[in-house]
Length: 202
Ligand code: MLT
Image (cartoon, rainbow, N blue to C red):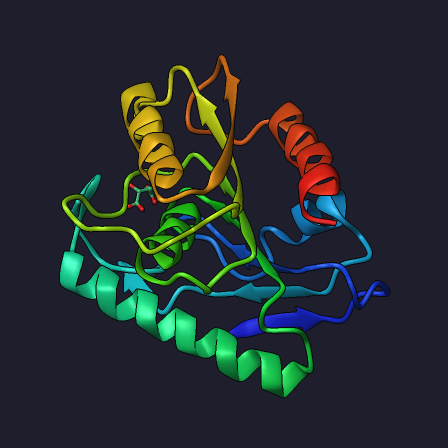
């Protein structure tokens, strides 16, 4: 997968896996990585799917309607890429915290829906429920921060609460942070996730 790797100064800190939103690329979230923990190594990946030239991490059939087979395939592809990237760049495969926005948050949530050991933790900005009707793997104690907007037209507050319940049902320790806005990422939300990261992931 097309990606950037930046080695951090703190080798014990989790590597931040940055996953952009629809139409973004591997450079988009670099400033966020620096705000969350500047000493961490960063692995920033570009989605392998193109929707009319806009990179995404998996196909969708319509706005908010996911191509489930492609989601499963792309989730496995990303999971296997993490194994390879850890060897290639020499970071600890078992110490990765995902930081994803929108479509990137959805593939990060999908990693947790399908694999018990994919991620050490996750910061999900404006995520949706990636799949329904499946049993989640054990996620005992996995720290997850969800940033959401009370007026998000793409991801409703009900869906945010549903995702929280599903992750908590699998044992994850979820912190839910609300903003009064829509789908956009806010500075306050990023600051809250950075404080959460320092408390829960270091
Ligand atoms: C998705 O397709 O993953 C969600 O609708 C969010 C987005 O617009 O990318």
